[in-house]
Image (cartoon, rainbow, N blue to C red; front, side):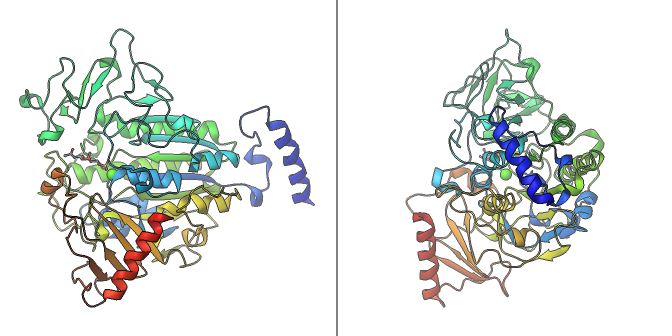
Length: 514
Ligand code: NG6
Ligand code: CA
């Protein structure tokens, strides 16, 4: 009786809602069993598998993640789709592999990579009645090309399914170093317009190249252009003085925006994509986190990130929506120590293993590139367990669509599988194969086998990869590892198993041609 009257009730609302954007059904009006859960994705930048205490971190403690893992599902074989940021984010939001859109690390003035009209995770959830917001790092491009930061900056997240956005437009180390709320640069003054260039110097601001004495942190050549807040960045920027961000304020600025979003949205089901700048470079944690790890700024940035998770989790409780919120905590790619700034990350590492037992890190095709922390928690719905299911972030899309009963079009989220039972820790059956994208090649998992495609000689690798002190896993011949007894990918078995190598190469071809 209840359910039929509810469905009649919502049918009336659906009819009426054509007048409005989205539904206005209050979550509180529905019996709990029929409520769609809120979804919060905490997406950390460059956080390695071993960087959190539930996964054995040594130099840093993350009590809020301990709390999450002590109730939720902690995954040991969960992957971002790529070992760099832009393609991983593209996949998370579209349910497609990054290579389909040639997703590569974008400059700070790149056009929007996800074009309006493309089905996305937020647009799918919007159709299912969700209020959607993105807060934090974007790095998926904005505008149509040669973006003018003094006008409405679009298309961007608002044109692909987010109702609210508060962004760091690209990365912390790239200009423009300003916040973007909706279409507008925050605090921009009319008589001080912003200009940005990635190929020549603009304006009068000092640069790291010319004025190294002004720097608070030494940087490599690529990070030595415009100085903002004592830190030289990638790219050149003039104007927008009143709009410049202060890196040390990120934890408070972004978590307050998240709090406001939760307070505003709590009557509808909501989706919050909380995308961290931490622990990407430049690592400039707030004063109150300084020295809270034994690893210098990189470890302190982890403490800061953990605090932000706790702050947002607390607000879910305060607003009375925690029990009906599905939380996914994960990272966009594996760890990196020196990524362009001299912040002592390598020197102060001690015994800590950022990638845990896995080889390589950010940029790598080895497991350390994409095997990232993932914790999922939905009170009363997820099982408390440690799961070794083979999970890809590309599957979040179809899994959430299944959960909210939103049918997918044929060409929507084509690489995404509904593995919600695995996300909730109720099954170990997720993927049997999983693609891993790196800057120079592709890897493929088939159960515990790991195949790495040979890189092509003539294509070469971006020259800046040379000095990262990371094992990339790029070889001119194919590699094959059996992770069952070789979790750290030490012994190449490709010559012993030529048929398997061929089969896995064929599988990659099939996936590409799909
Ligand atoms: C690289 C930057 C690096 C980082 C990365 C993107 C250089 C030398 N290095 O090009 O510092 O910004 O891009 O990181 O320019 S990601 O996590 O957003 O993919
Ligand atoms: Ca990243």
